[in-house]
Every structure is written in structure tokens, then in C-alpha cells.
Length: 263
Image (tube, rainbow, N blue to C red; front, side, top):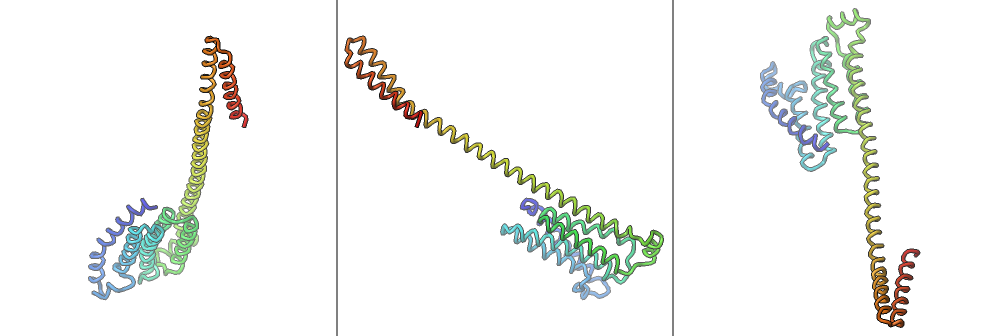
């Protein structure tokens, strides 16, 4: 999420800042003049919503607060989309036309953003919220003549509901399944990584054990070899007493090796 926010937040913030002059010019040049800037349905208000969200997201990102940055980004973009839909439906002075229906595809953006930056539960809640908003706006917004004619000619026009709603539900289900699969993969990778780390630790302990055994056995084996060589030399020199003493010392070294191997 951090890498995604590092790219998305500055880009949307710059676009929002660049949109401020055009929004001010559009609203001030309307019938209400400068007062149009402060209207709830003005473009300036829409830009202000997304700009506020982006500023909060950017500041939170700079402070390494990834969750807050993600939430502000999602709310800012979602708020802009909801305002656009409200201005073209419930808050519009003109009836809803067939040309406004494709605008509901914009509600896929919050679902995608939540899938990239949120949790599985937030994907479900966002999908339900966009579906409920679509049904409400399509049902309670007054329809124009062409819209009503289409409904009459197509068994009530339920296709106008099913297409955007099905698109939202399918998108939400796909991203939810993808995220769930990704999380399962991450769990499996973590399990494999843990097993690999245990294997490396066991290999390290094995090498340490071999090194310790090598060190412990080397001293008595070298001593035994030395005693046997001295015993041979004393035998050749005709000194049976020293030869016997070397054999006794060699036997002690052998007993030490036996203790190391069986204790």
C-alpha cells in the first residue's frame, strides 16, 4: 500500500490543485455569479472535497500513517463521485435521462480503491453502499419521457438497474476473491519462509555439532597417535618400561575417546 500511495496521492493532489482555477471560473461565470462558488452543487465544492481528502492523505503519508492516508484518499475520491452523481440526479433540476445511467459506472472506482488499500470487510461494505446508492438514485430521481418510454418498452426497464448493479457486485466479488487468495498465498509464503528458516537453523546447529565433535576428538586422537609412536621407539630402543608406560597412556586416551562417544 505504501508504494501505491506514493504514486497515487501526489498525482491526484496535483490534478485537484490544477482543477481549482477552472472550477472557480465556471461557478463564478454562472447565473449566480460569485455566489455560485459557495453552492453545494458547485464544481468548486466538489473540487474542495477531493482536495481536502488529498491534503490529509498527503500529510498522513509523509508521517508514515498509511491507514489514515488510505482512508482519506478513498473518502476524498468517493465524495467527489457521490457529489457528481447527486448533482446529475437528485439535486438536478432536470429529470434523469438515459444518458446519465452510464455515470453510475464511476461507483466502481471506490470499490477498486478499497480493494487496493482496504480490508476484505471494507470491500463488502463499499459494494453494498454503492449498490444501495444506485438503487436509490435510479428509483427516486424523476425520469424524463425517454427514460419512461424505455421502461415501458422493456418490461419496466429493470435492465437499467441490473447492469450497473451487477457490474458493481461482480467487481466487488472478484476483488474480494482476489484479495482473499492473495492473503492465503501470503500465509503460505510465511509458512514456507518459517520452515526455511528452521531448516537453516538446523543446518547451522549440525555444523556447530560437527565442529564441536571434531575439536573434542582431535586432542585425544592425536595424543593416542603420539603415545603409539613413542611406544614403538622405546621398543626399538630396548626400554620395555617406557614402552609399557606409553601403552598405558594410550589406553587412557582411548578411554577418553570412548567416554566422549558414549556419554
